Image 1: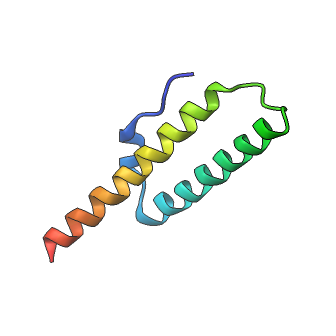
Image 2 (image 1 turned 180 degrees about the vertical axis):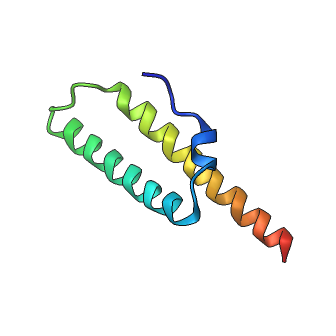
Image 3 (image 1 turned 45 degrees about the horizontal axis):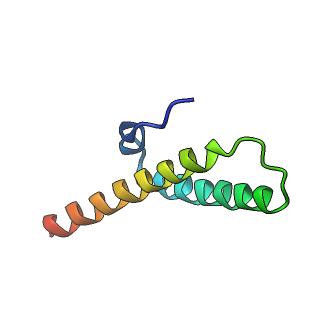
Amino acid sequence: MALPKIEDARKLGEEELAEEILAVKRELFQLRLEQATRRLEKPHLFKHTKHRLAQLLTVEREREIAAAKGE
């Protein structure tokens, strides 16, 4: 499985972006829970999930900066 592309995150609308960030944070929590209970079978998902969260937060911040410049 390849890492997600940031272009996919940039295509999302404002509400979709917020929902996706929340969903990825929940997924990361679930992965941590599975790791703590020793049920985690795919440890590479940590890297993919953290990468996706970083992309989404980056896009969110880019939009905040663009909105501030537009004022």
